[in-house]
Image (cartoon, rainbow, N blue to C red):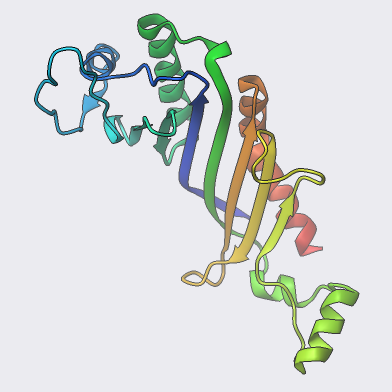
Length: 216
C-alpha cells in the first residue's frame, strides 16, 4: 500500500503590472476582513506621498501563509494542506479583484511548487537498481569503472525551458533521511489558472501512477 504525505504546497501568481498594487496598509486591512491573522511586523507610516510595500510572510489562516514579493510582483500562499492552501489563494485573488481592481488579465502566469514524501510498496533504491537504464548509463559506467544508475529521476516537458511560462518538472529520489520513501518535488507553471487547478486535482493520482510504473 502506497502512503503519501504533503510536506509543502506553494501556489503563486505573478502580476504584469508595472507597479505592485498591494501596498501597506491597504493589503493588511483587506486580509483582516477575510479573517487572516497578520504576522508581518507593522512598520511606521511612510512619509506623505510614498507607498510602503511588505515582503515575505505577512499573514496566515490555519497553517496557510500569505507571502508577497513586491520586487518580483509575486503573490502566493503556502501550507501543507493542498485544499486549504488553494482556498486561501482564491481568497487572496478575491482581495486583488475586489479591493485592488486586479483581475485575471493582470496576471502573467501561475505557479505551483509541491513536495511530497511517498512510501511505496517496494524500496525506492531497489526499484531504481532493478531497472535497466539504457546505453548512456552503460557507457558512463564503463568510463568510471562502476555500475551506475540514476538517483534523481526527473521528467520535464519536451521542447520547453524552465524560463517559459508553461513548464513542468517532476523529480523523484530516495529521501536521504527516510530511505524507504521517495521525495517528490513538482514545479508546474501555466498562464491559465484553470489549467493549474486541473493539474492540482490530478497531481496526487499522477504521482501514484508514476511510482507504480517504476515499481514495474
